[in-house]
Length: 566
Image (tube, rainbow, N blue to C red; front, side):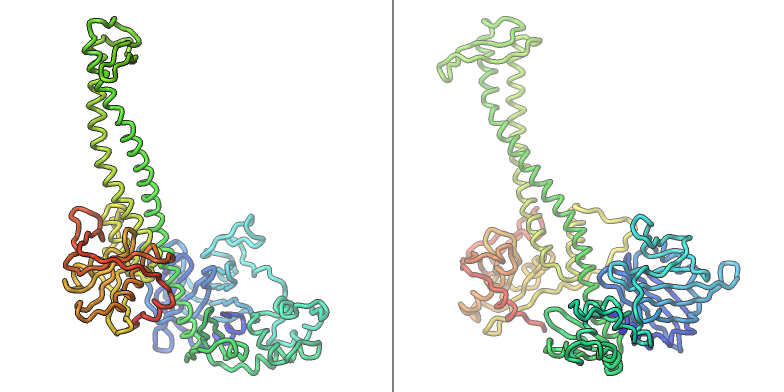
């Protein structure tokens, strides 16, 4: 990708209608991104501005975003100073990735005020800063102290431009001085140009080099200027292993990519490129919060199982305590009061043994103490074994959730996990959170080579829906043997299913399981009529009978070929 200064230069043409427009509403959708609803030229447009470390950008958007219930402080400042304000100017600074938006508004008592919204798109150093008419910082999306950077960003401090090296603007005559800054014998000429020319990306420099064939002192300036002139506005997205885009087609990228998409506007291009990445990052961020909770509970349950096993091991001494109580009772007449030990003959094993005693207790009380310890250990063992079974089931359930978290790809799947964790009491729902409407269940869909439909549940909500509600009793159900995995169903009656269909469905089941990277994975299959829910167990737990087992090796390439996008 290349959202460089040249791209911003072209983008400013799209923003020119904003001059004279009114900012009606401002929202903040995440810690880095704001959206402004602007009414200009008789229509309302949504301007998205982000200082995300890897997704920093500015463009119009047609996508819808959720907004936090409680507005952050930065958003409150923007609403106070910019909402209902008029955009007097919006401009790019030089050929850099910096944009200044000047807004006039009225304060609480009706006096006119002037504010400037400064957008710096500089990778991980990106920021959005609100200043007054004297360039004094009012607030910023990212506050930076003097100890963190030589240019602090704090309320009340005078705004200063980023302390970057002075570069030559390729759109002015100062670019003619470029040869003075280039060591033509020093190598890495593209990198040298990047360090000395303002607002150009490595992608643009490579395109210019491709057009001049090789750099020399005579063509270095003309090569840049002519490339700028030759690139006409044609927003292009290149699709491949690593997607790329630019405001124009580039010959270098045309040679590298087989697929490309053209857009009517630069904002449409940026919206297409960044929105899916934003959604994926947002899903990952939300999923990581729940993943942490699941991992914490998983570790806690493992420790609980270890403690229960120790308790059960210790309870095995209960028979000794019972024997001690009986022997002390049998030899009561021979025991001296308040002794530290009793040496008696063990008629169970025909040998003499020593029984520890509590000095402050009488022989009778010591015997009762051992009977009490026996009963305590017996009850403790029964309860520990009961709790151990529950803990093992909980561990299997949490292990299944951990496997399901690896394949989350949509916000609906994140919501399914959240709802399930709340229903199981693993997380608590915030009182003020508005419950979302139940969304439709979307199952993964595949086609066998014979054209049969195979459905897959990626989480417990989808698994329960697929097995208990969507599929019929005579459909064939698949699941990996003795490990976490998805429910998989061939949505056809047994008479229509061939051995090839069974093997392909089994591979899909193995692929959507913990055995994804393994070879010869055992997969059970049976008709759904033989699959039963286990009462009182965790979601997704079933038992089944009349199964057959096949062994398959899942190959990702084969599974991808069976995906059905309809």
